Length: 81
Image (cartoon, rainbow, N blue to C red; front, side):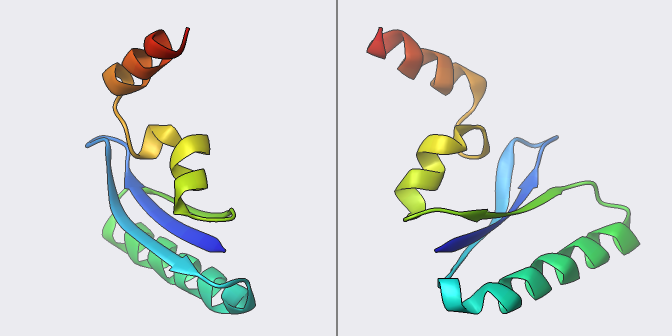
């Protein structure tokens, strides 16, 4: 699966999270490009990424910074040690 994420770093939150099947790669790339163009034209500085993973749970594990704040990440790391 592919996951398109638009992230507002200054706010620390996900603005958009959309999943695509592997067969929709061209559409996912097009939507990523369209979002980047619109943000650029508006002067908005957001991260826009397209990630490949088995499922959303995997993305939430491997790219935690998009879904948790630093305190949450630190807390979970202290709990696993």
